[in-house]
Length: 271
Image (cartoon, rainbow, N blue to C red; front, side, top):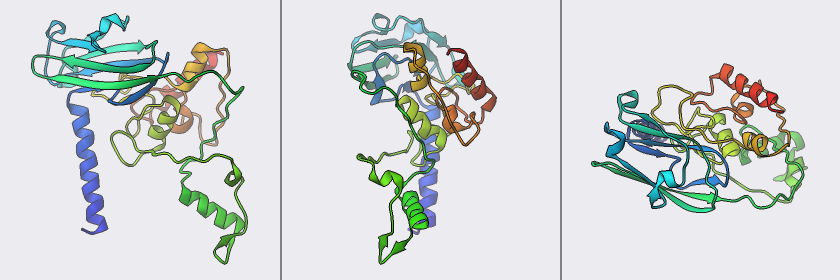
């Protein structure tokens, strides 16, 4: 199989996966999600068929979900013509450990597990996060060669961050595609949750409205809600672009720039 055919096959598989995830029954947050203790997030349950609330059971860690989640859910009988949905907004879990969410109807059983973790005591006064768009090893190597030169197979100098004491590599793929974009990847940085291409601060469900997908709280929102600390954004792109916008916004489409600008203003007003 040549490279072109392999690329076509990967593209077809990725599109098929994305379609199946958008139309099949699902639970959000997704399986094996890591959730910060005390952070806010939405729980969404999507069934394939149409049911009344009394026709299905939702449990969290073996008990009825109402025992651990006080928020009243929003019930949608037939969302986007694809089946019944149940949404719990702004949920917080207040104990660490493994949680199992199970939703069961007469025809199907859905189940996911989450790891709820604590961040530990505060150790630093401030954090500055630099985001270099596309900052891969190949990009750094090219920058080193062009800026410092190379002679006899050795670089003539180092980049400033070559001497940093710690280095780590991360996988940037989303849950719908091996190839990510700046919206999806920045959303993972700010929320700790993997999402889909073009999405910011949400899990991509079958909702037809860009702003109605299940949300996960960003680190900026968490800091503003729980502390008196300030959050600042400095960018060489427009502030409503995907990377800076993912600090506060929640939308299926990164192109919703008017909405992203509104959310930035909301956070400013909370100072």
